[in-house]
Image 1 (cartoon, one colour):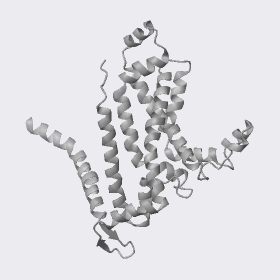
Image 2 (cartoon, rainbow, N blue to C red; image 1 turned 45 degrees about the vertical axis):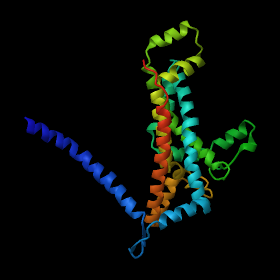
Image 3 (tube, one colour; image 1 turned 30 degrees about the vertical axis):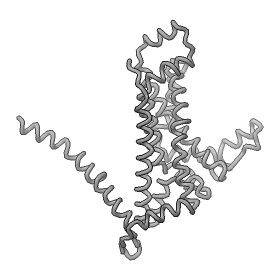
Image 4 (tube, rainbow, N blue to C red; image 1 turned 135 degrees about the horizontal axis):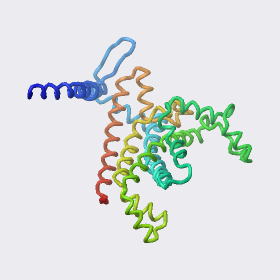
Length: 296
């Protein structure tokens, strides 16, 4: 019986352990090795260059606007997720948890973007904001805002804010659903006491709900912070990183380097991204852990 139990445990753990060793340990080890090498994709020759790739990365960040935009935009995604997307999600999650009229329909509307392929979503969004076939500019003209009509994804001044708007629209459903689930677990007695004490909806949200779902909010803050360092598909599909690299990100730049066959430089940039991302995420986690959690 003991042998059968051990065999069952080994069988269940074999695949995840093997997957971890191959796709996490080995791949990351190879990435570190590649970052100290220079590849010639035409001859297949590999040269050890020590820290030359890292030195080149830091020089490019300081001198090349492509890399400067990549770093700047990647860091801007953190306040977008934490200071814009999350507060909006908390507010929407709170409103939809109040059982307002047609609340089930509103929930479906907000959650729908999270279950649709991002390729389809970016395609629809690109069509909607197109200056030729889109509906955004005609609507602006219909309400008398002709001066606001733009090539939203084609101009350097509006491309990045438009991509940010898409990310908020596409991500708010997931965040709001998590918030609604956390609110649903709060005992109803607490809300009854608040009503007896005359708490307004605003005070109920700020003084009761937010402290009680703080662990969930903290988790979403960490998700939003760490995910900023992996953003690339939105910019790639909507703008290709343009115009003039104004919507570029570090993760997108890594894919560009890989497509060019510059594996050493791509690996070095990836290692730098990992170290910076880990440092910022750990600092955020440390600050969040210092806040006292309300028990219920």
